[in-house]
Image (cartoon, rainbow, N blue to C red; front, side):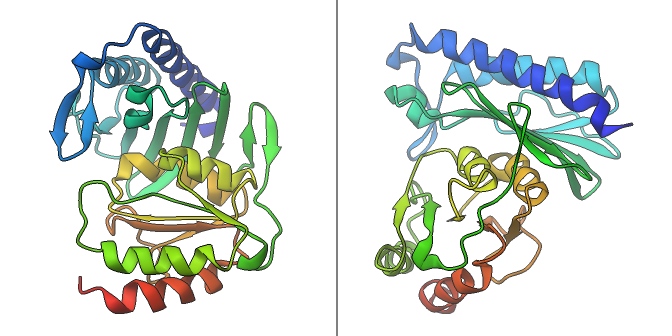
Length: 268
């Protein structure tokens, strides 16, 4: 399998799902919301979009399995597995806030090798695969060249169902707020990572993340020259459920803040 030969097809699948999501938003009825857990929302749009994505990807790589947020497929691949979030930013979608995305990654055994993040309303498609640059709508992108947190714009995500680390999180948030250009909470981890890859953010950090939230974005950040680690600076991110993505130049400084205000004060 050649990644450069299939990525265009994966982009097409993401855009078809995005077109469906965009169309459904015009007539979406909030009464159709379901709850998977505390503040964990889902609708028929998520589920139908995922079904469309799974069907499209099966044509591209029939032997691959799926790791999906809405569990519309339970197929497991011996080597390849797609990791899919059909609508990252469901709460934004439901409330009419126009930042949400389709996120598709391909995992070769334990290695992430391809990622596509399609930001639906801006019609921005970020994509990359192993061994090649990262792109936004056909134009190569790279992480920013800012050298310090003081010159950085940083993205994060707020806890919305697991508040066990809330105190430590707020201390970290407060300290960063005082020492950077600003903090942003967009509501789609996939978009946060794509924006980091494109140099719009210098860093993004969050905990309690699922593989489908971040898998595609990780590939794009790395291929754009950035760095992705867990809160201890290690490479294992998907299973740790915590992530720090940076332009590669402020990683050490960010980890110092995380260690001081989060890692060292939280019993895991």
